[in-house]
Image (cartoon, rainbow, N blue to C red; front, side):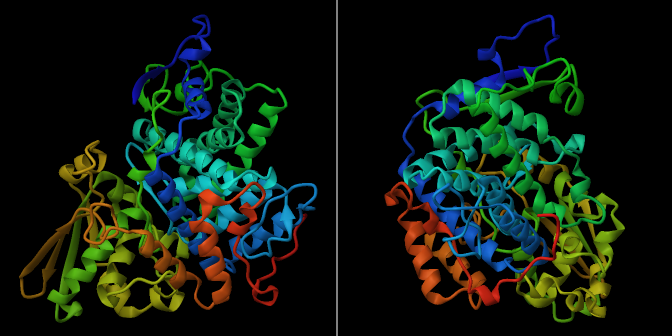
Length: 502
């Protein structure tokens, strides 16, 4: 890896393209370095993972609406087009709209992969737009693997180095340029074209974190899908010879100067050297439970703790000592009353560690639907327990959250339970069981099991087996065969969206 200094320059100090972060990203994306076998295998896992969570959410309203919009932009197979989850592969739509529909389906349940560092991300959000373009332009499985390796690499490398959250910028600002770079690799574009596409993608994707604050709406699922749509459009414009605001990161009126650390900013961004393999996907991790990633270890810890408590009603107070990010984003440090409201939306509840810990402690299980129903959230004993829980920032857990050492990096916390008789129960967990360093790291069979659980009763067994065979054979899929990565439902089982403009 090569570490690049990134800072703001006045307009009078012309910065060479070769010294700009967008160019360095583009040069790395244009590098034809082979994809390592273990990276390719993990890409297959994440394609299976994405399909699982997308189909599980297929008839939820935001996904149904996004699909309805996409189907309003139909294209014939002869004209080239991409598939939409749930819909037979014989029906194709314009790629940016396929990215919109499929990206929303993947993100809706908040249950696919994650990477947390200086900022946070769901790098599996790279898959829908890159796959949509690959299907449209009839690329091969190997082409898709190369594009996805780049998308994961760019997003994860930016997330390691540049914090968006402290400036209340949503994390899609790192996702959109990664998607554009990945499409550039997929298509074998020259660095010059990718450079312009990356800059366009950065420029149009900086949005605020209000999408994840207060009354969290369906836009939380739409946001990464919107980034994918913007990325495809950015690459299309760049391929036609159009330029972009430049330098988008380092300029006097750039995103860094006015939306991030300001004119005195100084970031260090590490990217693979030319000829160096893109391996960042191996540092990411998926979710076993459908909830914000920082809750994964705490859900597993709740399962472990419940066996030590005979009567949950005798709990006086629960304090979760955890990282700054967990405390202020999904804990009581967020100061969001909605996080304590039994009538809150599912999108809000899955960002309330107080609710999540209470339900996990009571039920000893977590279900992507049952754990969030209004009836479940409104249970009187749950509300009582929920409101006894608070979070506190612990500097050591914050340090471990931000550690660059993967062996000590942690996303969990220490839980103290005060009982009515004055006794205390204390336990901690650093990483979730499914994490690569956890008690039961996810492997191929776990991804397949997750797929079967989430899609059971939704798709036919034959369709499940067909998809799993195609996904696991991804490196061997020839040009024009990537439509096989779609998953379809019987037409009668697919919800229909309310009418709109399209």
